[in-house]
Image (tube, rainbow, N blue to C red):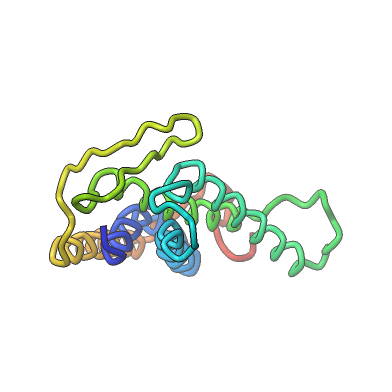
Length: 183
């Protein structure tokens, strides 16, 4: 799949979160998911790295999310007045941002499993648990028009989510104020 197709998948997967998060958090969530959707293909620029290798696994998606959680929690701690309070809970918004990172990478891996370019190396998404390559190839996505179509579907899903969000539906189960920057 081309990069524009991966961005479309990230938009589609982040849409349900956008529908229930506050606008500022939803925007950052989407930007992080879009950025993370490009991370697995950085292996193309690493000498000696195998494309569709470790960066195209679910374990890598989890690792990116956990690394992001560490960065966001540390940034939040440094920005708080209780900088040295190690017992302070991780802000919920940091968890949502970490989920966005994992979701972006996960979407990339899933898209490559489902829609590989012809003659591409298959993905082993369960590595290191299983080295078996997975290649479903539901659609041949080796052209620009199909990748732009995927991007447009992601934009459409996102537009629906933003419209739904404008109706005032928010996540309230996690706290009385919902998810916002003050958390």
